[in-house]
Image (cartoon, rainbow, N blue to C red; front, side, top):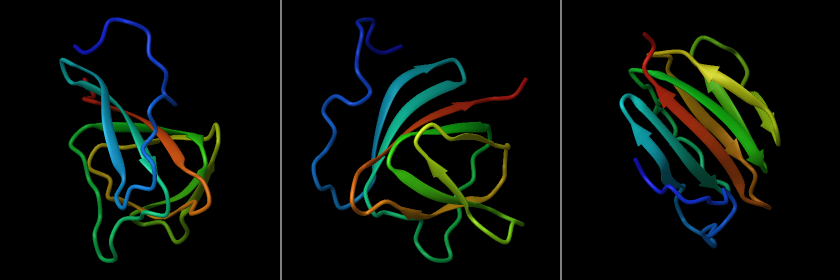
Length: 112
């Protein structure tokens, strides 16, 4: 487990990073919660992301488009929007806001 004191999801946001920044907030027995900060980054063309476990994501600020394999159009996620990505489902980020930071909360866990 990580920190036991209170934190703030918007504290210490990176400035102008060339790549997405992943920060683990909590990790414990098959559970990982992370903050992801994007600004214009996307999954490289032809690449797909895929996890063994479930991934629940929420956009806390900014906006992004997420495409799941087998779907024709990417889903637009804005502040407050969330979705569950099933185990083994290939997906990719096709766009993130270039004008302001997109802050994601991602929860990775194993289905039982």
